[in-house]
Image 1: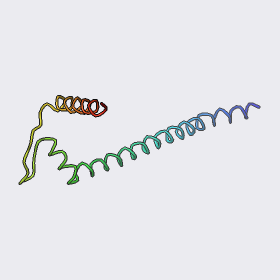
Image 2 (image 1 turned 45 degrees about the vertical axis):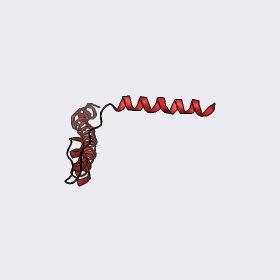
Image 3 (image 1 turned 180 degrees about the vertical axis):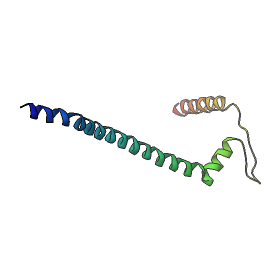
Image 4 (image 1 turned 60 degrees about the vertical axis):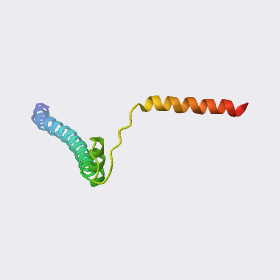
Length: 97
């Protein structure tokens, strides 16, 4: 009986370490898979951001225009929208009579 207990005690620590290392490995593999997915997403975003269409769109938001184009700055859009809405509303009321 004592020999069996001694064998059990001798195997406890290595088995505990083995299962602990196995669970840590699984956790690390999950982290690696997550990072690989994130890397793939970032690479896709980088390819899109460095495309000609994306660069042109960003340049337009910064106010750049292509040669031969004219830049028009439109002000008071909310006020214009209110006037448009009011004139449509008035036209509908006048059309019903």
